[in-house]
Amino acid sequence: MIRWALKLSEFNIEWEHRPGVQNVVADLLSRNPVDSVEGSQISCAALRALAINSREQFIKEQREDPELGHIYRYIENPDEGSVNARVGPRTSS
Image 1 (cartoon, rainbow, N blue to C red):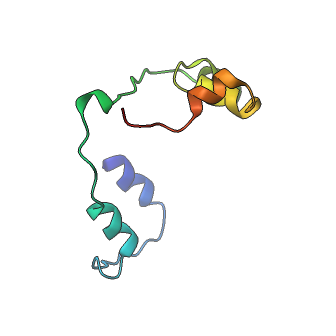
Image 2: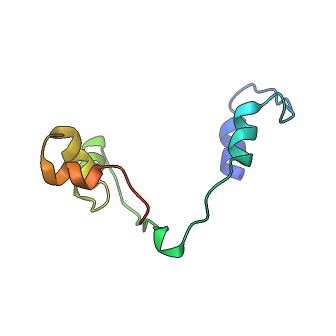
Image 3: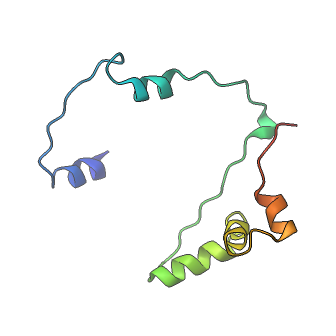
């Protein structure tokens, strides 16, 4: 919170409260019903600290990441069957 406060202090911002009736998008997101989720459907991405020194290194790390690499391969070659199957829509089992 302190980092956000420091970052936002750089700008001339006026905060204005909007009731949910006037702020439909936020109200929808906060009240949107969600189906019950089983524990086996929840996945958590493990984060690791990286010393990223350049944009190129950041892209390289993403390409080599087991969770994100297949997305890069799909973008580069969307017709490849194995990549397409991995990126396809998720369905509940």
